[in-house]
Image 1 (cartoon, rainbow over the protein chains, first blue to last red):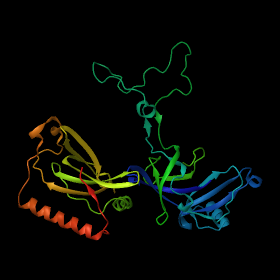
Image 2 (tube, rainbow over the protein chains, first blue to last red):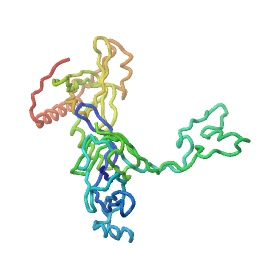
Image 3 (cartoon, each protein chain N blue to C red):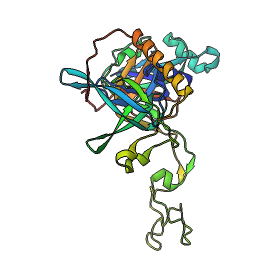
Image 4 (tube, chains in turn cyan, purple):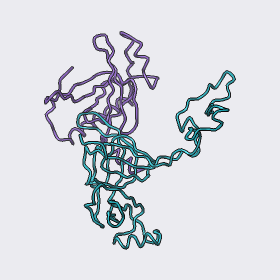
Length: 211
Length: 145
């Protein structure tokens, strides 16, 4: 189980040995440092907490400053925790770099999707649109939301307009196409959630197997 | 995203030949059959150029035994070893899809001639020669198709 944090840089394509090309997302990841190890005894569960991206002490809140001082590491902008099935092998202060990953690894990538604000049902749930002509006036409307006298209410969970995006999203079983240890870059096959510059968590896939 | 642009430059080839729609080109394409490697030369007219940066590609059309054949070549693909221009085309469209509806003599594209073209060709040849001299001399066995 390996975990690393990074910033999404953007997408491009790379050519493989067999002459095909593949679209990749480039992620600037690490170096990260373990800031806390949670154990069954002290916290009731096993996990590691890692920090990424240096920042100044002045920019860090007081309680956070104490937290970093206790761990004996420089203040970090991003802190993330990952639960582990068994007690952590890492200890506080350990550093994690892109070297922990290699070409061909299968990973899960957690990010925050682009915010779309208050979105209608077409964008948010993929509803179909009404006709634009022939006197129709229900082009982007959701239509009926239920029967009348019975049940006399709208069912819970009815798909409607509302806030869309800015939500945590995990892209599972993503293949690592290339690792550039010199510049701390990881190339992931395909797209992952979030805008350029968005923070991503990359961890060994929970279900996928290495092929 | 300046860093991304730098990265893309690095991932692709340093220089691409100056191609134009309507040009007759020879694409030297590396083919691997089992353990054997050989370079196939695909000759034809550039119908269209697509993509930008590392995704730049050309569609080349030629007539093989009375049947039109089109192939798309990503220009930055290492398997596309070389693209040479044998003839500049005089065209008025950005995409020569009209060639698909034509047969026989009509499929020809008029040649673009003139001082400018001649100079450009010379520059291109010099650049290509310089590039080849720079890269390590490797035994190149070329098989005509």
